[in-house]
Figure 1 (spheres, rainbow, N blue to C red):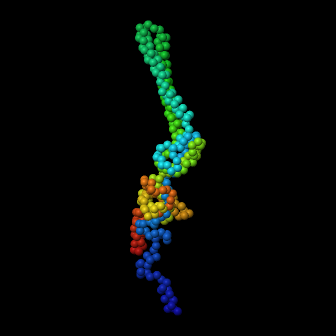
Figure 2: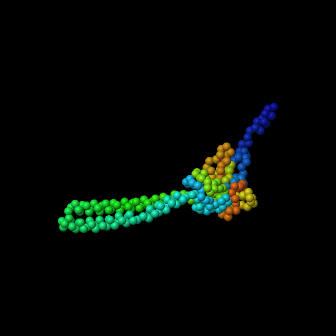
Figure 3: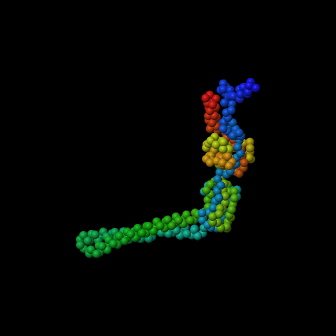
Length: 306
């Protein structure tokens, strides 16, 4: 019995002479379903969306006079897409233009000022010879000052009228609705003859560039950075790869699902790709993954050779 007890005790003790024994139980803190750290990331599901979606509305309420586009039309940035009824604004602009071009009043005051200046010069000469009363000289000076003030007032009024014209012109421009982006009309909400206030008139989407959204598991955070490139395989052509660039990595993840979002920009100048479809995403270069691999290797050496 004593021999059996000694034998069991010797089997329970660790083999202190073998230095590689602790390294056999070493494992990196990586989830079980993650790929090996070899500089590559797995293929990911993604979604291709329009670069921008704009609901165009009117800055002022009114009745739609005409629509210049229909669903499916291509529009350029700053192009007119709709127009509200603007007869009153046109009349107001014409009136403001006429008032801004009125110069007769200023010219008349300028003539009076020239006359009062000549009159004042004559009175100064006569006063030096004591040929006029002091009251008449004071009256001439008063008339000259009033003429100057009247001319200044007419010039200020002329500037006010010019600003009124600019205001009327801006009010008329508000009746012409323009697209802020280049894209395609995908929805028309209001038509000619309908009254609009705050609701949108139509919707325009930007198709160049497209936006690619992907959801990555949290353990991949830090391996994807802004400026990295990736290959996108759209649903309509899953064998064709399209190059995209990372433009945003969400700094806040979703704790419930253990994921974070990544946004990429996909050029689409030829308009071949539609928006609103699924895709697959494969990153072509992962610089930080190789760095993590080297760091993990150095830590493993340190553990094996303390």
